[in-house]
Image 1 (spheres, rainbow, N blue to C red):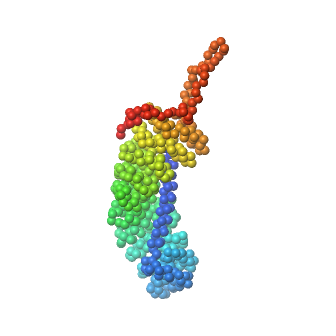
Image 2 (cartoon, rainbow, N blue to C red):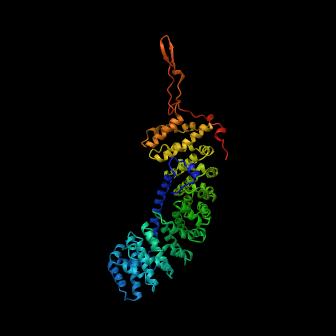
Image 3 (spheres, rainbow, N blue to C red):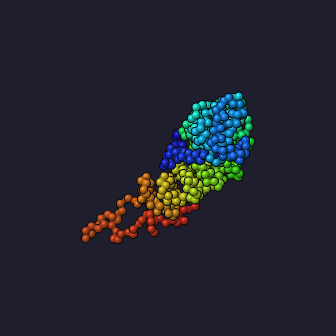
Length: 548
């Protein structure tokens, strides 16, 4: 995990530590990665259905069933046959594997077809045969039988060597197959890397024969950069410069290619500070601004590039003070409000997460966020009225502003209805962690209220906060219960000083104690005697005291 500078640690006062916050983000990313991987693996096979013949012809060939498969396998097992005969057999198997409905993956494996297909990869005298064999293996690797290809002796080695074939179609198909293998699990990903595939892929990035080859190579690279445990940074770092160049030249390339390059960079930057530094260095200092420009373009146009660009910026913001500052300097805050207005909930959630990391930064970084027009207002609005996962991220953001910011920063949150937002969070009885986050923020707000002689406690009462705080005394989470008791005692408890009226007095009837009649009962947390809100309690000079 990332080790923060001392000043950042002092300002990161969430109540739940920085390590816990980082783990929360990694769980979210893991879910996102799985969804993305499933989508992409499916696309890679289905897009590969019938390039050399019509789909109808392919389906007709498949309908002949296993007898036809037996003939194809026999034809490629007899090496005395002509090259045309071998190509015909391999192509027949490939076509059977390319049908859209129930392709016979298991049957092809069980009949022993993988061995001759792998052997065909090394027929350097026949690129067309290599291409067809790689294609057939690609389709098997895209299925649930990936291991059959990955574990077959020499398969990964031969495919990796063919990334340097003189034939561009062969290189592309082998990159495709290796991408499917690498996308299956970290063990297969590392096996592909260990055979030198990344360096060969990098050579294809530098001199792609065509855009189709470039797109498939970038996709394969993205699969080699993803997964937990992460690949060795020393293995993936040499290819980062090429990925950053693709982002910089995105207007000349296809959207899918740029999207895959961005996801690859997001996987690598989702690590410790060294991972972030490697990605930043590969971009030559220009990458953060390129990413912010992508956000601007996405606000008014195609949003396809926005999620991975936003993820990279969020990873940068979760790093050291200087790494976070690069995100701020790139102009991220200036476009953040518009991104928060976008329709896709995952994009809004990612931006709130990014802003929560900026809000956990230095006083200067917090001040930059506070001063950005409409930003705090939108964060508070989202924390009260949005889908819960997005609300949680925005609550983290405004809580960090309160727990790590100055009195002026806290007041800015209050002026934008922050107290009401935290009070609403206290109602989420099943979200103990977020209740604690809200309580930490409220403690900071109440402390500022007492220090500055503001009336924030009264405002908390006016929005029903005291009742909600009192109810937490019965919460089943002991940590929440203890925190609620602590805050009640600190900010709403009775004065423990001895009442002079209770001193005994002596008369002819003996000792009497205090008042002739008891005072009316007072409940700090309910009823008519609870603290009532009056507009006069908030003088204009108090509520708008700070200027930024």
